[in-house]
Image 1 (cartoon, rainbow, N blue to C red):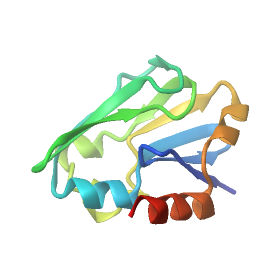
Image 2 (tube, one colour):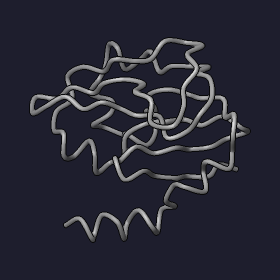
Image 3 (tube, rainbow, N blue to C red):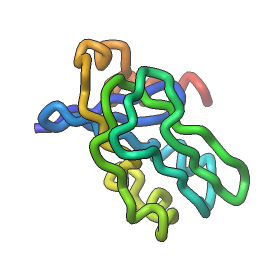
Length: 124
């Protein structure tokens, strides 16, 4: 079973078996518009909470992606290099990087789906 968390920067973390799949939320892709380029992190990169792990560029702007968790990048979604528009089509299925969690307690600092929806409503 997976657990889903969000940051106030609109990244999501889907946790499955100690691996955190990090991507951007549907709200983020909607705000960015048509995504034209995704810069992925390097494999085996050690990251801490808040470290930049990539960039998403759209026709409107470029946004850094920050790691919501600490650990090591163990997988990247290479399909995004050739098809960045996948983030527009289904951002929740098209994660950017998979991070082997080094401290699961960091997840306690993130929002669950209900909290994230309330956060979005407060931002409107």
